[in-house]
Length: 128
Image 1 (cartoon, rainbow, N blue to C red):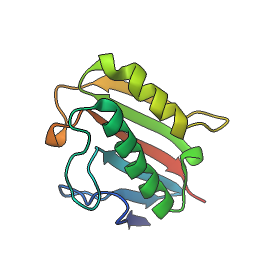
Image 2: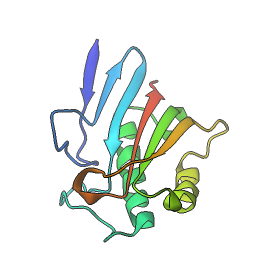
Image 3: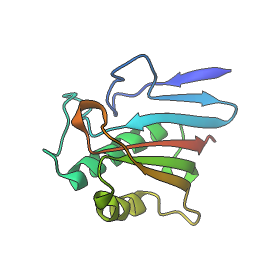
């Protein structure tokens, strides 16, 4: 059985997808960019740290709405438009994913992200 996860604590999807999908005891979270959930506007004015904080807040809101948490995340993908931002993003990432076992992760530089964002993060987490 597949179930969509929807929360007002994270931005509404900007396309034909869900914030997350529950399937087989796992939670598949769509990539989050730094959109303010209420306004739907990109935050940070180009500041990658401000964007990263909002991305992580959005992702945590989706995890919590599904009954999961950052400590139950098993895999993430971090997308950056500039790998020179890696250190600053990584420091904030480590504050959220600070459990005894850090998630497996990939980090890639991309040419562009939706809405001109500088960072996007998705994840897979356990449920229950």
